Structure formats: structure tokens, C-alpha cells
Image (cartoon, rainbow, N blue to C red; front, side, top):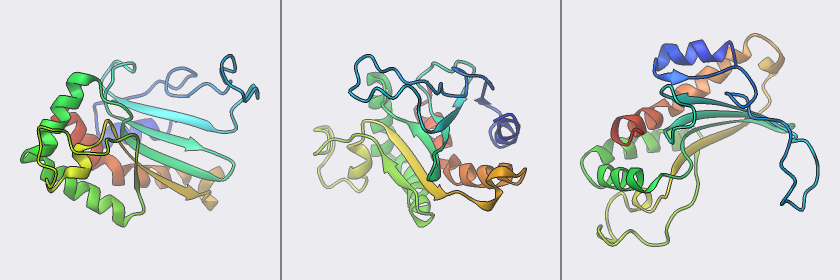
Length: 182
């Protein structure tokens, strides 16, 4: 995290990170109070690099997780706050949406998927046959990629490997920041 953070800030100076638990590093203990799964610890490490200075602000972030089986990367907002959702849909439905659609097409070519909840139908304000109907249905927008552990995982080369994966997702992150923001 301490090696990747400055590299990501070189690509996007607005990205913040804090190399500590409950900062950029997700805690490893699980909240078992309301879960049927009472295992006390997670089996993965999670990291987050956020837009802006407030890590709690509901803005786009870059995510990474290391599991026993793979390394995962993501970018976006899991669930938009209501005002941000309105702003997002206006941008997607208008001219800026074409830029996002192009960025999403490029990600599909790299094996990335879209995560999060969506509506079954396009919101009433938009025609059902809108060219970006799939994006208008989203309640949040996160793109992600899971890859097998690389040979570089335990070497300094992992920093370059990780940054290269985040670079693929930066167009979506930048679009969200430019058109939705805080």
C-alpha cells in the first residue's frame, strides 16, 4: 500500500490513502454479531484508495483485495447517494455518457466486469431503448477484475503489476469524479 499509493497519486493527484487499519487497509476481524458465519477473521486483505481528502465521503475509489485464490481490483462507487444517483443518470443519459460507455467497452476487452445492484427497467425519465440503458439502470457503478496470483506477488515487481491493473480502471474512476463527484 505504501508503495502503490504514491504511484497512483502520480496518475491521479486527487487520490488519497492512509496506510493503516481503518484507513486504507480494511480491518481483518469480522463483525460476527448479526452473522451466521462466526469465523472471527477474514481470509483476505482489502485496500482502498479514495478520491479527495475525506475517506468517508461517498466518492469514487480504487479497491484491491488479496484472497487465497486471486487478487481483485475495482474502481467506482458501490451505491450512489440519492443526489449523486440523479447526477450520475443525467450525465449517463446525456452527451458525457458516451465517454463512459467507451471506457466500459475498453474494460470488457480486459476481462473486467460490472458489479453492484441495478434496476430491472430503465428509470421512467429515460426511454427504455436508450443506447446506455444498462448504465442508466445502475444504482452504483463498480468495475472489477480478478486475476490469479502473479509470480510477482511476493516481490517488489507486484507494485508495477498492481498499478497496471488500476490504470485500466482509471477512465471510469475519472469519469465518475468529473461528472458525479462528491
